[in-house]
Every structure is written in structure tokens, then in C-alpha cells.
Image (cartoon, rainbow, N blue to C red):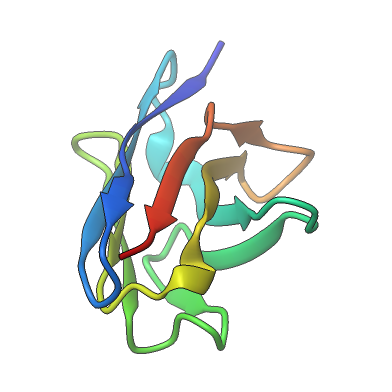
Length: 118
């Protein structure tokens, strides 16, 4: 059974950078997953931050456009989120997510705390 395990995140000052990683295991068809990063701040609903489809086309939420970059490495079975120019409002728990062929509920990573504070 496929699993996604996250790493990275932590504490950053405003204007700083962090990188999140999400590695898949238990699957030989990682290239067939549509992937995304979501976040959930306290008291708020989970929201999509960025996504990248099987063809490698990225999409971004307006609030991170130009600051965050999503990428995937199918050989390493991993998806990344490079976060630059971080703002306090980026503070949240970040989750990676993958859907095989874009179908079903998909698989979630365990979540990683990102805190942006001076």
C-alpha cells in the first residue's frame, strides 16, 4: 500500500525560505499520481497551495503565486514545495497529497508544521 512521508518545514522568519519534501513508498507507479500540497491553519479549513499533474504542469493558489514552487522527481518518487519570501500568514500545517490517475480520495502525508514568525 502506498504511503507518503513528509520532511522539512519548521520555523522561519518573515522573508525566509523553507523546503518541504514528500517521498512515496509502496508504489511503482508514482509517475501516475497527480500531486499537491495543502495547508491548514488553526481554525481554518484545509486549502490547496499548489498542485502538479502527471504531465508535470504546476498550478498555484493566488496567495503563493510567485513565491512557492512545486516540483516532482518521478525517479526519486518525491514531490517538493520550495517556499520563498515566507509571510506570517503562511503559518500552517502543510500536507502532501497524491491521487493515482487523479481518481478517488487519494493519499495524504502525515503533515508538517511551518511557522513564520520573527
